[in-house]
Image (cartoon, rainbow, N blue to C red; front, top):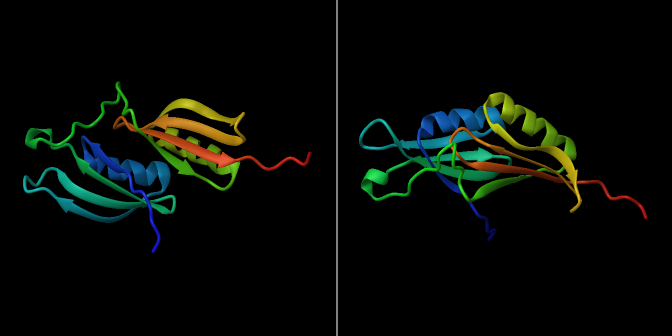
Length: 137
């Protein structure tokens, strides 16, 4: 049996977040469950970069967690791992073009990776990471 970790994001505007994640990261929507109020989503399931992402609207009026705000991003980031450094650059460009805010432009890092970071319009931070090729020596 395989094990995995699935991020579960709370957002204000889950339907809009799904559309953004599709445009910015190429996510595929697997399912959504509307809330009883007919306005919010109780749960949604996406496939993103080979993994799973769950999200729902904020239900702080019912004791649920508050969503982060764009001007005060979440303390937790979602890391997307890529095989090739060029994928970091392409995904960064696609995400920013879709409306993400650049926090760190793609650059080769001392730990041996191509790395970039963005914040989505819903206050969630995304880290984009790929290993650099091995140098012989």
